[in-house]
Amino acid sequence: MNVRILATLTALSFVIAGCGGARDISGAKSQKAELPTIGELSGPVANVQARKLFGTKAAGSRQRAEVFGSYARGCLAGGQELAENGPTWQAMRLSRNRNWGHPEMIDMVTKLSQFAAQQPGWNGLYIGDISQPRGGPMLTGHASHQVGLDADIWMLPPTSLSLTRKQRENISSISTRRAKGAYVNSSWTRSHHNIVKAAAKDPRTTRILIFPGAKVQMCNDEKGDRSYLRKIRPWYGHHYHFHVRIGCPSGDNSCRNQNPPPPGDGCAEARKWQADILNPPKRKPVAKPKPTKKPVPKRRSGRSLLLADLPAQCKAVLESR
Image (cartoon, rainbow, N blue to C red; front, side, top):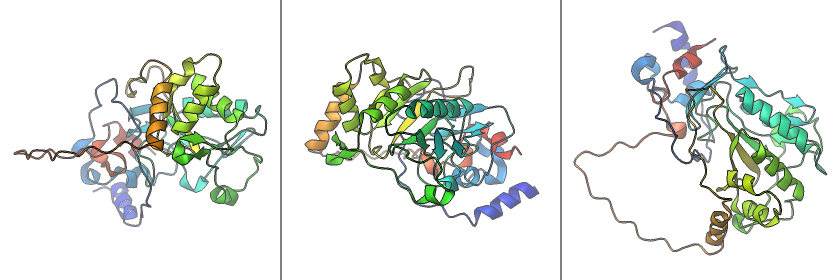
């Protein structure tokens, strides 16, 4: 066993992974076949949880920017750090070291922050989690955000862009929902609508995840072009922030996109989510599955992924200095 692997394994014994409400929001299956995995190529660390390896990397790999795999099963080479402070943004929760992404994602959020700064009461954006320096599964929280193409944008309008590191750890965003997400509350403004709309209209954006009540409100309020609404998808939570996902960068053949959202503006679907929140449907009894001769092993996902489960290229990303 070489010194570097031994040092890594030693460090892992001191890593304590916190609890987080991880949800796999990768959605529909990728349009392409999955990449070959690392498998046993990684040697002694093949069966180590990938989050304990990628979660301890302090900086991006010295490689050209490239995505390997999909949003909830992959890694990021040549990740770019979002500056902690910018003229129209601040990166939040710096202790997590999740202000890294593909250069296209970094460009997208900084441009969106410039638009936000033009809205009444907004000086820009507070940017939440994007990705770890080399992507991969996270120590806590998200199951996605693994390839630097996802970003969480806080709902809290920034009144100050000079928060200290400590203040950024302690400040909280605001909830914009009521009635368990069926409706928006009084904190939701037309500026929220405009910022989410601008994010959706960026041609790189493939999805925005937000609570059902916000999608319904945007459907009700939109009087002009409605085509962008297709990208805005109702999802659990997502009332303290909205989640922006961009597609695979052009020419990046090792990146795996989601299938696109269904045709149409998606407003009927959002209203169905709303109705189910207000009047939860009765659960149908689930029939017990018939026993099989050979039990099918459960596919690992999210934070349970082992290094061996990731695309083969992630080995070089992890080992790059």
